[in-house]
Image (cartoon, rainbow, N blue to C red):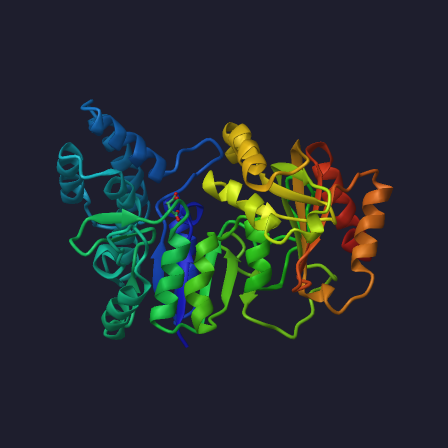
Length: 439
Ligand code: ASP
């Protein structure tokens, strides 16, 4: 068995956290490939090393003195090294970083040093081999991740190595220039490594015991999710559930490798399993609830719209021409509604409205702002009659006016549009009826 283990920033924020991670790795000999993030926050108002690096590099870029800011970063690492009683010194590394900052090596390079240095410490602490991610993770000139060549390079390299540390978050272009993924991207690196070594499982260690049925900022102590499919997760993360980087599922999904989200501070918890498919029923009919505020609906009316072929295309063309992606398009006989993100739409709304008039010649266009979308996701919904009925009667009892309903043909989710002000009430009502009342 081979396990790839990724540890997030809060799991590696201090020497004390490093020790917990060391214990976790040492208790299971199958945990052979380790992906560290940069040190995260040690306490609530602390600053992540990645953010310190961005700020420090901006000083360098503006030609200001950045040595103090860099020394503070060095101190964060030194505290970890001392706390672990390692004889390692990062002095030479920091000299190189200082030189490269002066030469304006770029923001990506700067941010990547957080994982790079933490990887060096982790490798020394565990006695594993260190592999610079710039040597094995490739990006195309377009800036997109190059999955095929990365997989080939990584496979070859890791085939010969029994145990290694590969820092997360970055890689390089073919010419060696460093490039990072978007924030939180160490999750993606872990998934890429798991694919390359054909791991049996990709363990993603963080500071929560997996995914929760609903957002704990809205529901007090929500239940955890034991097993979730990739598809369910995709729906939930798109709608705002954030434990894992959205793009992290793609590499392992190709190989059918399960992801296990675990808690570094409570390693005995089983966490959440993310799998391709399962015959395990979720505890409740629904797997999770997520949602986002800040949508607008654009309602278009035209008499006899139903008999005009191409009307929908013309309307959507108006959005496409202005670079706006749409979320949902429910329609009636003479009406069509397009849901968009309010902050993307607001500056362009009049242009889009006039384009709709020009292209589709409707009778009227009406915009409604400040809407929220709530997604109720669950593979169990397909086999259970009355789920929609229960959702809507719960919402009615809670006095929530439903503005839009969209059920995908997969029957995996039901999306409900409500007023921004009803967002939390709606989530509570749905959680109550499916989870709380079943406990
Ligand atoms: N350290 C990076 C960030 O703060 C990447 C990561 O932690 O995954 O976004």
